[in-house]
Length: 282
Image: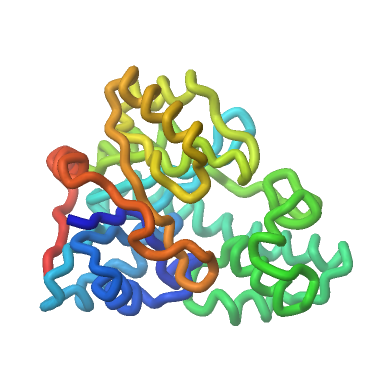
């Protein structure tokens, strides 16, 4: 089985619609794909409709924006009850503040000389929740930077960069508990991605494990082999599973869907922990 547990649609900052993502997963020869848009489940219904008759299994999920000790991090949540009140309210709070933050970042970019507009960023985002990748695409369109990745530097949009503006992000221990209370399974996304900025300490990961974290996402484009081995060792020490995922964003990133995958036994162990929802098989 080929299993990719981290992919985005244009319900957040991917470029494929949820239906196009399902079609791409079938073309890529995947058996299982997880839809994990940022802080939203808006793409779930379309993806569930699209998966019918394909033979593909869809794992509904989300990627949550968290922060601890001033460090941003992401938590993948799988198979939670999307209408459980406490977790739904926290996702709504994050999404609302994402809009405020987006407008503020665009204004910072304009003050720094980038000829972009809020209307342009909204056009790029479409129906998705506006995020920094949409602003990065606007900077590319304006000729300010050569690529989306070039926008994520201290010069522009990186954490702590000249145009960065902080947003509401959930405490990760709270997030783990919210996911578990909604019947879901929490996994720490790309915990060693140093190119994105500062990463959390091993003590923070141990605290998350004690709170109910299920796994670390180890095989990821942003992890070199040394980082992967360190994370595997830490996961074993803490009794956590390890996953692999592409973190696919369509044409917004170069990584291919299914470029990194999760072991079938790990997948089965993860879904066995879920009580909020079940995978959807077409």
